[in-house]
View (tube, rainbow, N blue to C red):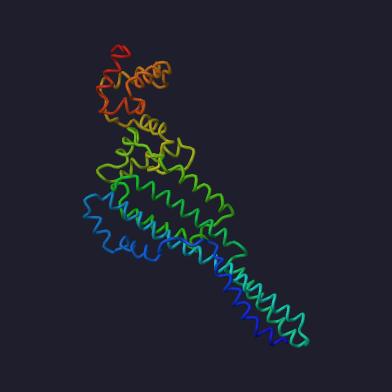
Length: 351
């Protein structure tokens, strides 16, 4: 009877695992993933740098390559996740059913010797699984590892998406490919183990918030253009200016932020204006009308805003279909030179 149980047990386990094959943890997806990956291989060509060098529109080429590589990495990561979840689930089920079957045989077997043999087998299976459980899955931390991977991937993706908003002078393809390598490593078990902490879930939420904030939150304004020209001179980063700008950001901004993010993110628009002012950077224009309007909207100390006059200017801009234009751009952009002259006349500002 005992020997019969032993022989039947592999069959039961095989049937059960066959039935569990449909329990994958993930729904089936449409399309042919392998075909998609094969199509995306062209973005990993060894000649990609040469193609970039000869591309007529380097920024468009850079973005296409990076988006293609991101897509390929995401497809591989999805397959990797599914395999981890499936192996974890089926391995546990197989072990638990094997133990249940063997210990059942121990309970019903007629011979003490046979019971001892089967009990030893059961102990061995359980012990082997517990060893795997502790060393490979670190006592139920695989979900935390996956959470950390997702968090690190999103953090790196934020950096990449920020870079892609810049020109190729500030964010060339070579630099973007370095970040792509970091994006891949962020989705590996070694990468997750290197950076995992107790707050892995909080990291994912923080990165998600940044990614949501990033989408549609970039603005281009005159202060940002001024800071960019201060930071990048003749296509190269000016190290002295970079340090000066970074020191100002660290002193004035109460959070960690990179220079590209500071230049582009909408939430730092007012801080950019202050940086240009306090770093004494040259504006795009410095014509008399611009100076007069700037003086008009400031108090006698020439620093704090004169709210009454500022509202008058805003009202004039609204009546003249300039509501979508910031006051800063209106004051400094060359394209609004004629409008500034009209504003001085309309508001009866004396020279």
